[in-house]
Length: 144
Image 1 (cartoon, rainbow, N blue to C red):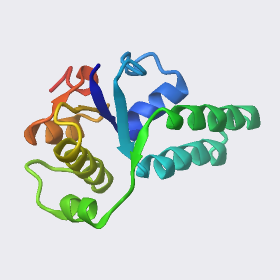
Image 2: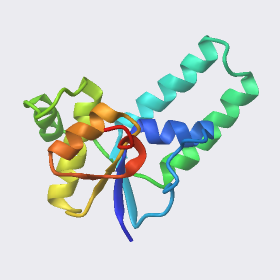
Image 3: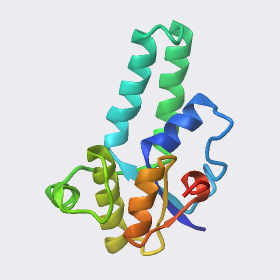
């Protein structure tokens, strides 16, 4: 089985049940992400609540589903090594949180999973991952 690093965009599309959500969800040997997903996904749910886009039932169900989704992902803690790598120059333009995800995936790949595939719906982040030698799932690559 293949091992994947998934960023929050992948989790949020699965959570929302979007038609363009990654079809490979759950078909892995192991899935990894950063503990950063806890913040990113919960901020999204709270934004939906504050903007009145979701009902109370929607919010409750999203919280339940998010906890289920998170249980199947091995989460790497934010460490000084990850933060140093994220702060280092990257080969392409990378936003701050994306740099943390890429740095996390890079260290996981180096230490544990040399075959790790990066999964994101963000084209800019996928471009950076490709530039760093990652294979990427095709979710963000259709227009690269």
